[in-house]
Length: 338
Image (tube, rainbow, N blue to C red; front, side, top):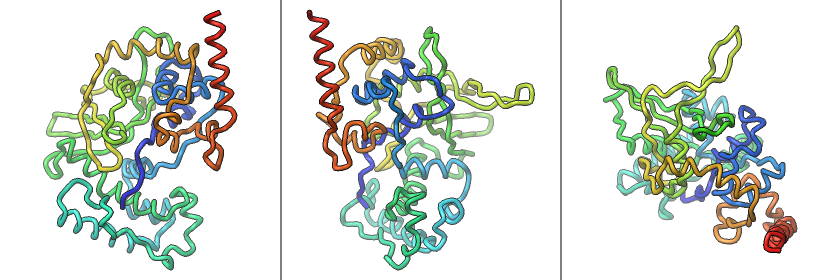
């Protein structure tokens, strides 16, 4: 089942749209991360636009997996497709057998794999559930199952966590993102971790989803320099959000979304120097030209961008706003030169 999962940036748009980060428009961390993603997205956000959160089947599967429910309950009770459980079991068995007979990474993504069908008669009557829980596409049921049953266990294996040898748990976590000596609030950033216990020893693998094993340096640098994660603490009978220090220094990994690789941090910048540059990058986003570089050179990034509607029509034509924005930025430089 080869399908396009590359170039999702779900954590970025979820963090920006998270009510826990309300009031953070113009925050240097978000401005810099958006500018690194695509300068035009930073411009839309700084000018008051809010992102749409694109449907992301791998993210949805990881969220349910981390909640502790079973796959059966996730599909039967939460996502309302109980009669498809037989097809799900068949699909897992077929992929397991295919992997055994074709022992290379995620071999079921090969065009030669043909075991990803749910008959039309079985899908009948479930379109409302597909629209509500699976992005309108029945194929996402099997993609959800594949992420749950194979991709997440592949992440675990690449993180060197062996079943039966340690006590481990996969969790969602809100990582504290901040810049030292910057007098702005600490932001919550959605990520994932494996907590592994071996006797009294604790190991934390902090993972962020990546596309095609590419570790975007700014996001991973912020995760590396994070001093903790957010949790709810009871104060005066009320729950308050507070940064909880890491019990041990986490090992930062990328969790590749499609083939299921998990890779340790590969920093190409000096992490401390890069994080210290964030206010400068944010200033560039606020004061300089913000061209639609993703659309010009890497349009696949636009397909799951939270600001896609600002740049493209439903027919995927570039909107007049983009051309006008380029013109305005050019005039900005004319004024500087004059």
